[in-house]
Image (tube, rainbow, N blue to C red; front, top):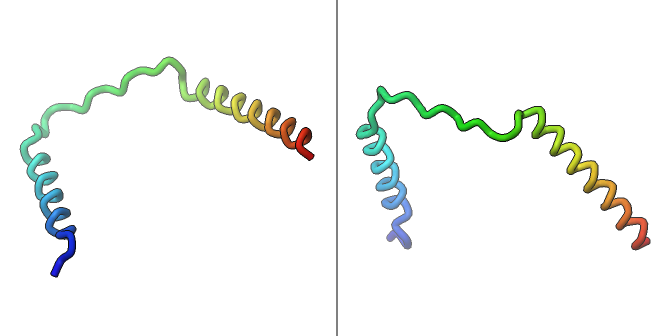
Length: 66
């Protein structure tokens, strides 16, 4: 006896996904990626600055609570 019928649910979902793939037109090219505001290099630099600031603040908090 299956408690929740999870295997039936997974089979139905897999079948529905396969059916959607068959219906989707295969000739359409994928949409171009949207251009962001920042380049990957700029994002990395901003992330690095954020992490450095976080470390500086965290060290200050640790020193105060010792």
